[in-house]
Image (cartoon, rainbow, N blue to C red; front, top):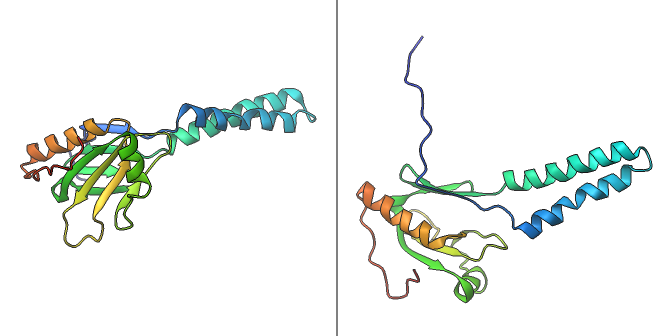
Length: 171
């Protein structure tokens, strides 16, 4: 039998859940009344209870399955993907028309992306790993400037050199 110190969960320097917008959650909750209407001819009480349960489960499921952005332990995690901060290069934060361009016509097929409708901000981070075919990570964030600041401070704390910002960086 071996003894080990209890594992403490790593503390996140930054964590953001990219949950659906309010209108999407309200739209999903409409499943509840539909189920209630379908089951009402059988038993109105059962239909009502099933409708409430289905509506709550659909909304809870959408929130629980939402991707998470996390910066901790020297890694950037976006959804199921992760990369060491040392492999990250220039960081751009985009909002408004610039974000729309980055999500649409400006989206490179060589980039990895996780984009959510209803979230205006976009973070674009260059990948400087020569063995990685991905050139950039492009992902949605409600607070892109904060994400960029946390990545920079985490890199500085880890001793990774920060790349020089180009004049085109938008943060």
